[in-house]
Amino acid sequence: MNIHERPLLAWPQEPGRVPYWVYTDRRVYERELARIFNGPTWSYVGLECEIPETGSYKKTTLGEQSVLVVRGKDGQVRVLANRCAHRGVELCQSQSGKVQDFMCPYHQWVYDLEGQLRGVPFKRGVQGKGGMPESFRTGSVSLRRLAVHTRGGAIFASWSEDPPPFEEYLGPAILGFYDRVFDGRPLRLLGYLRQKIAGNWKLMLENIKDPYHASLLHVFFVTFGLFRVDNPSRVITDESKLHTALASRRGRQELNDGTSQMRSFNAKLSLSGPELLDSQKEFPGDETVVMHTIWPNLILQQQSNTLACRQIVPCGPDAFELHWTFFGYMSDSDEMTERRLRQANLMGPGGLVSMDDSEIVARIQDGIRANAPDEAGIVEMGGLGAETETDHMVTEVAIRAFYEGYRKVMDL
Ligand SMILES: [Fe+2]
Figure 1 (tube, rainbow, N blue to C red):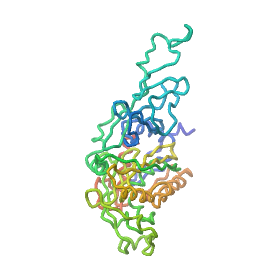
Figure 2: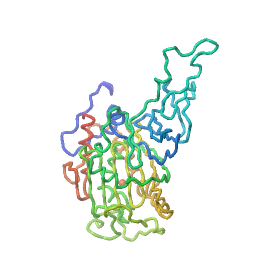
Figure 3: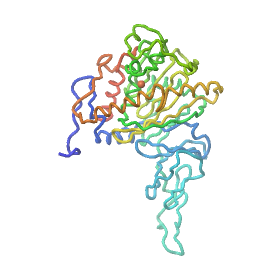
Figure 4: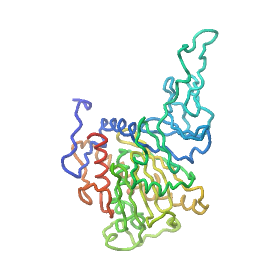
């Protein structure tokens, strides 16, 4: 029996289990593209500050499809399929830029910033011969336009013609955390990092929903107390169980009931450049870190003063790209901008903390790739429930919740 005829394995009966085939099976991945990335979800595609002027655009990927995020003559943000309506050519290859219109390199069909077809060479033929038929109407052809929603300077798009209202989609609790960062102040683009990770895209979301690992894997977090189980923390999930916020307060480099159980804690380590961790309170409340996972493709990071959107771009079942966009606010002082950039050293492909995560995600894929389709991971830390609010970090509750929501969407 070939792989396409073989039925998908059933989800394990036992609670607190995630089957490994969910990370490796090509058919699961195809269903994810159809139901999730091309379905009624809101995917992050960029920040408004990346396309400040009329004609500014950025190219990005939604699911596996190339799209253009463009600012029109009316100032509105549009998201257009980056695919000529004529023969399907990818119109634009640059990552970003500023244009008057988009011209296809193949037959030079021209589209305006709204995606409307404006010009077709030889439309009326040449020397009385050829050309498009009388019935062809330039005005009825356009690039496919996606549904768009912007809030607080971030841009989301959907291939669905009828996506849910964005605010309902996030739910009140997660929206509250979202608005804490995207509070309406104009954003300032600080820079990009990009990496490709040889693991399933869901593992990246799970990693950010998993505070249990943070106190064990990350020597840097543990030692300097940035994110650690002995710190006061909350894990909040919305009703769909798909979005999560992990919120916590920074602790000290001290030996206590928590740190004494952590092999990676070292009371003697010190930084030769302690200004790396010099942070300043800037958000309401006591929490110094909130890591958001916004279904299906955004990790919104607020760790001390470093802010970033990490966009997940799936590339088949066993790889994804992670596009990091670091930002601050236009109102930031130079000193604050410098602080944000300095703290960005914790993050990204070579980040003092995040490097550990990319490495571990690839190692999970290596561990399960060896064809263990009928085996499953154990996700029982903190009990077997999937409650929406937990007041500590010794838990995998958000991963259990995630798979509850995911199975509904995927009908698994
Ligand atoms: Fe981590």
